Image (cartoon, rainbow over all chains, first blue to last red):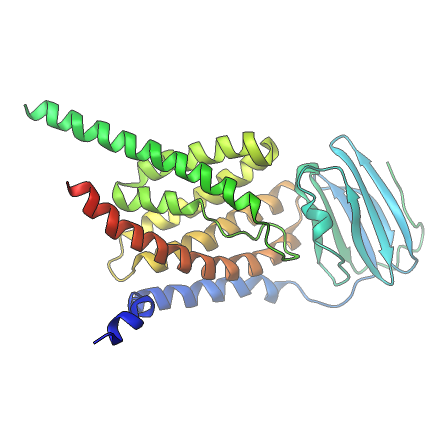
Length: 131
Length: 173
């Protein structure tokens, strides 16, 4: 009967496939266990792993970041931060939108730049240091 | 006589692998035309992995590696920029290693192998990104990338299975 044909897609799965897919899903969820998800109060900007500036998320504002790799414009609004503009070729960092929770990260890979939300003391001593 | 038939087989394999390399490049171009409306960077269909899968199943891991290298090098020169090359190689390389190893397990079909490859592709890129920016928190992006990869990988594996059935028939002639 045509029954077998209708189930064609699912009958192709072997048991091992399902076990493997379950394992991958578990592995995929692993990072969530290690990184807590509260909101943070500062954003730390790094280029090639070195901190170039720390931005408080408690006051709105925009922060241009200029590095040897190119230019990025960060914007803080209502406790979140997003990449407003970037002159990298793919602009994936801009598409990523706003982040506000601890350990959330915007990465601009072409510019080796990352913005990570950290706890901090609200960046008490300074709003920003831009190199 | 023996030697010439071996030669013929080698030339055939070389040409088909080269064709698959061209197919991979074409597919990555097609993919660049249809950006997914998702706010997640790096999420894509991974269409080009179809050619790598076909090379792996028609021949072996060496042919698949050749397809991967051709695709990664040319598509980064033509479409994505050289900055993307390390990510393409790292993701694609990890995917290929996983697929070549898992293919040996008789308990798995091409669906599972392809799903694992797609998930490994995302994981490889995130790992390299986390290393280069020295930001371990970037690993959080492995979660959505791998979950999406499982879905796209299964679908792609299904398509590859359909192609293989026809290709094997055509190549027997």
